[in-house]
Amino acid sequence: MITLRHDWTIQEIEAIYTAPLSDLVFRAADVHRAHHRPDEVQGCMLLSIKTGGCPEDCAYCPQSARYDTEIDRQDLMNVDETLAAAGRARDQGATRFCMGAAWRDVPKDGRFDRILEMVKGVRALGMEACCTLGMLTQEQADALAEAGLSAYNHNLDTSPEFYGSIITTRTYQERLDTLARVRRAGVTVCSGGIIGMGEDRTARYGLLRQLAVLDPHPESVPINMLVPVEGTPLGNRPPEDSLELVRMIATARILMPKSMVRLSAGRLALSDEAQALCFLAGANSVFLGEKLLTTPNPESDADHRLFEKLGVKLVGAKPVGAEPRATA
Ligand code: SAM
Ligand code: DTB
Ligand code: SF4
Image (cartoon, rainbow, N blue to C red; front, side, top):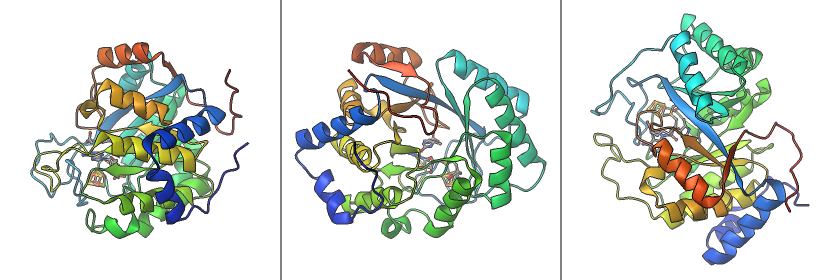
């Protein structure tokens, strides 16, 4: 049995990340099989419930009001429309519905009550409900927990050292504080980051260390590959090497054995073979559906063909605290 560690050093992480690829993937697959079924992948679906016009300056983000991007701004959706979309997501095999809002932090007005209704409605449909709404106060985190929220997504994005070159309008510590409030409220934590923003490997080790020293580890760790969007400061970034994504996923799997590791944004830029390597390296969750928040994602037919070819089943999330199921 592998014991969970929360004291990984940068040197240890570097040694894991830079091992020969076959050794790294073999080790990650071994850890993966000890804690999860290797033939199962969780499907999550995203909906942007409030789009664009965000005051933050995250250099990757098409929803920042500071950049000239082709985004149709949209105020907070109503509860009925949102729940209709959640029902369609369920019909397409999603077991987790994640609602995203382009906010710096959650407004303290009737819009928050609307969010609480959405969370209750998604749970009533029998799905896990996840939100990503920006920074939260403790009172808001507690109210979301009370409404039945399953998970809260708030990414650290990169290392503390590289963070300042990507975002200047809020601090790394503010992000950590929101994660701590979510944890205190009893909601599971979804936190990860992005590769391909011009960071070096050291920044990736730094991000992985920040996530892995959290105790408990985030239950879910989304690894995004930058989707360059025209008009954003990172709109002209060259595509990241997909094998770096494989290394990132494998290292996350080894450091955080029990967490769901989500192959998130960037799948459209990957071949079937690259995605297969990501699953072999321990990714066990993806976003389904033809759109992420504002950018495209693989078509459902293509995804179903891929899962069929790989012999992977789309399944529900593991109940929190569940014991790993033994593999044959
Ligand atoms: N405003 C909230 C926040 O920042 O926490 C929630 C929505 S925000 C769009 C959620 C996450 O999406 C970001 O933390 C970032 O990791 C990811 N993201 C945004 N734009 C992206 C892009 N162009 N490529 C890859 N990931 C992106
Ligand atoms: C996460 O880590 N990735 C998702 C989800 N959490 C909210 C968002 C990806 C967004 C990609 C850019 C877009 O579609 O706007
Ligand atoms: Fe706003 Fe979130 Fe985009 Fe940053 S990532 S600009 S906080 S919507």
